[in-house]
Image 1 (cartoon, rainbow, N blue to C red):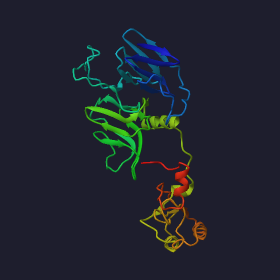
Image 2: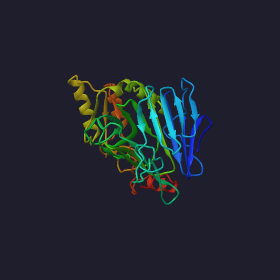
Image 3: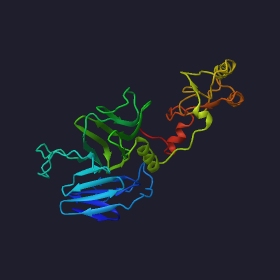
Image 4: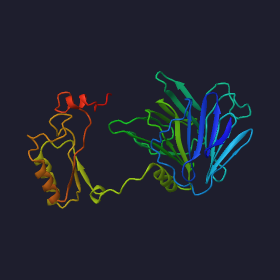
Length: 335
């Protein structure tokens, strides 16, 4: 069933409900679930800005179309979704291999769904979203920080999870001139294969992604920043040279390095005192034997026009002075 409701295009079939709605200029937010109601969380997205043009929705017996500026989405009466840019070029198309639509060129007996919801205990789903790899030669950029040397992500298999030295930011920018945000906080996986592109959420209640088209990478990136929020400009010292090493063990060592930089007239704006400056994990202070006067250390650094950064580690040792209170108050996260 295809219909329009509250400014969005809705597809409903066999317990699944799919929403496609304008979400700022030249962009759509796409959600789907097999729950009785659609979850309301916006996750990384802010409320949508003005689209700049009047979105249109048309529904026929065979398909429905929603247009928002430069982007258009077409949903067949069997639920397959395809996105087009302003020139009518396909930029993103769901990967489905089934017999729902015998007229689809990709009609197949192997029964692979584009939007696959596998129920798991507790009421959530293991979700897989699949898209066609329209051109194996095209490039994919973004997705955050990973311990791998590739700028072009095409052909890679990426874990979507936060780890030490790994920062997953599931926004991909394609050389096909679209941007894609996987708007789901679940741990998962992204595969940019030559035959299929897939995103997985291992435990989630709904599919949720945002897609935008643009004429340049700058335009696409600006649109992404507008819907997820912009960060304040860093202070001047944050844009300069940061000095860090593994590791500073005592206060005098930090100060001597800072003084030497100034003696040699080398540029420096900030020093990082990294881990094990504390008495014990979960005690967010300097170990007094090796850092006897942190206030004096900070004052001297600032007189040298050097700022100090001290990373805060979230782990809490059971022997630390804060553990018992944090346990009693329910402040600890179990891993």
